[in-house]
Image 1 (spheres, rainbow, N blue to C red):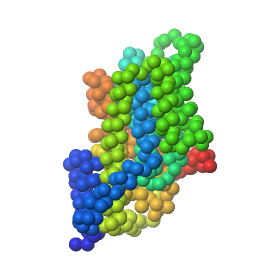
Image 2: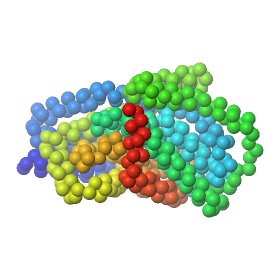
Image 3: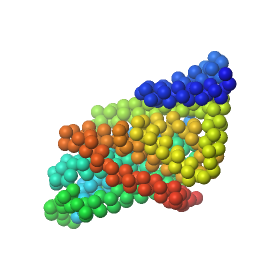
Amino acid sequence: MSNLEIGLICIGLLVLLVANRVPIGFALIGVSFMGIWWVGGERAAWGTLSLVPQTFAATWTLSSIPMFLMMGYVSYRAGLTRGLFRFARLWLSALPGGLAVASVFGAAGFAAVAGSSIACSAAMGRIAFPEMVKYRYDPRLAAGTLAVAGTLGALIPPSILMILYGIIAQVPIASLFMGGISVGLITAAGYIALIIVRVKLNPELAPRVEEKITWAMRFDALRETLPVLVLISGVFGGLLAGFFTPTEAGAVGSVIALIIAFVSRSLSLRDLKEAAIETLTTTSSLFIIGCGAALLIRFLALSGSGVFITDLVIGFGTDPVMLILGIAVIYLVLGMFLEPIGTMLLTLPIVLPIIDEAGFNLIWFGVFLTKLLEVGMISPPMGMNVFVIKGVVGDKVSLGGIFQGILWFLLVDLVIGAVLVMFPELVLVPVSWLN
């Protein structure tokens, strides 16, 4: 049996294991190790297993992941982001669907310190859903808005997805962050426009909030957001100004978050311990999956199956638009069943050579891929953000009702994805400003 045949058999086995709910990290490691043993023998397998994970984990840029996670968890535990929704509500409640619009704004602000779609959905759900129910908003609109607003957590930096992509694709993470800001703001604007149009056409979805709001209340809410504004400005202002690297930015953000939390006395030792445990747990799971992806890359190179698949896909046609649409469909389907980080690390060893060979800009593709993966977070039947919101709202909205609430937003996401394909400048022009 040739090495290529072994490679294709192992890829098929990997797909079978993932489809049967074997954890992606262990599936990647197990299949890659077995495949390398089959192709190169026992010594090659054990040597690769001892060398590749160590090389991957020792990558300096990876140290930014636990730091950004720590920044997000500390901010959440200390309640630094609690004022974001109140600020947006007081300033935007006069708009049609003002509370839903405020939820999107609040999620965008929370995204700038969280880096996680799930964390963003959970936090905003607990804060905003009771308010919308109080003012008789349609529960499906309320829950659907919160589920999709959470997807901004992976588009607006710091994005863990973008950091991992940048490491594997070997592209500047600062450039990915800049492109992510652009697409994140476009996405937020699309969600807000949809909410306003729907409520204009059907005011019963979101009755106008009858509340006397003074300018003093508005400026008081602005004062509440100052800690988050200081944190965001300190991290991303310094990053974009070139004072420190993306790797150092995570550490700077964690220190600033801790200083603000302790000065404001909003973080207890128990909260700090919980934030540290959450950081360690999440980092460990990410590193296991990442080591598995690094092993898969080595196996695909040894067996020649990676080059074979690249040549096969490119051979189907030279139209780059059809190629990127085909890849987009694959990610949208995978996103219905798998979580984003696992999906990305499972597929990048195969997809990246295809994208590079076809001549696509790898920074643009990284941002586009993040957008696709976040659409998967709200796509039926396994949209993870939907299940997170269901856990927050309990019996007030059925699971089917939440999926109904996100359908219009899915159309907005697909339109934005198509616009990014037609106008890659929306990503690449902001990225060029860094230079």
